[in-house]
Image 1 (tube, helix red, strand yellow):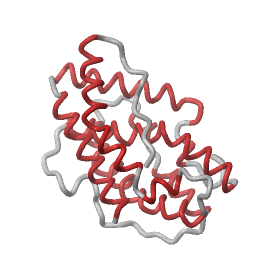
Image 2: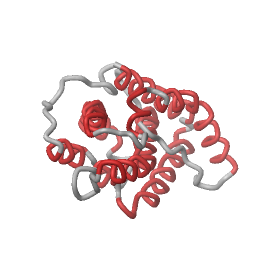
Image 3: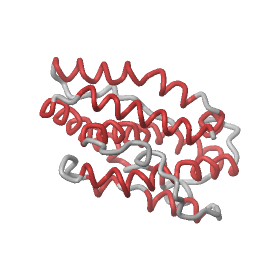
Length: 205
């Protein structure tokens, strides 16, 4: 899972301190995730259709769990939440690739953490939204190596198209507001670390 950690963040001294801490505290986990064979394969010029398909299949339970069980916790916090749904894009890609899958009972994000707070859920969302930003690099690699495009077989990595950068900035603004309003910086960071760990385990297995 390729995640582009933010260099463009809401500007304020307090906000800078929080976002710097968030990036520093999650950087080792981010690097570990990128070094997994599945992550290395998806960014390699030697990527195969089988490797691409396997990546999407591993990502499927994460996205299903996020949108079914984490999104409801954020409905009053992220105004454009519905625009951030990407499960239909992922399913379209799998259908295009003739990948066999079924709705899974695996809940990589929600099952292992009871009574999740909004701030913790925002930390999880930070990781997944960051992966959308970094997904543009994967999408370019998939298109160059395999010929799949955001219209044909690589919709998921197309993210929000030309609006991907602005959607990321908008999310960071909401994240900063949540941290300031609730004094919940530590809880947000814990959520991000949790998400990295669970996705790492999902991709490693």
